[in-house]
Image (cartoon, rainbow, N blue to C red; front, side, top):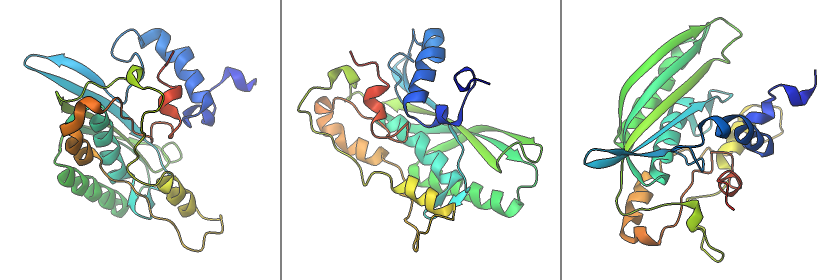
Length: 236
């Protein structure tokens, strides 16, 4: 079958094929509202305040890696998506798709990490769902989250505000998490594994409120890599 007529793994990798998938299949159907510009989350009007809303799905192997696991990764990823949209994270949903045969000990460690990360970030897991799929259909565990936060009035972020000569700030080394996961998969010759830098950035964003008007745009690079923010925001 022609590879161009079916979904490939690379369509989920954050690069060119993912951009083409989104522009071809998603935006023509849903891109006329808050999804326009593909932000990490939607800023929605609400009586008396604005809310920030986001969702994300987490598929990683192995489920546990040096520096974290899929549980704290899910919390941090959702908190960070809200934060870079200029929001203060408040509530999360937690949906688990568990593969038959996953040891309870592994699930317990992951859920403990979810709770610890949520507590450390000051957010509440407010709702959720659990499904179990037959052995061979779930890769151990998939996690889907959604997050809601309160929009911070100091920020008015837009990729359209990006100008030549702007300073680009990053919160740490790029690719630490990806390298940690790759090393943990084994068979790659690493003597010592790098540590994932999974962690929240919302406190950095809160600290930046004092100069909020000078902040043009923020993006979580885990949404397709450091190069994706420009390529996926339809800058013209």
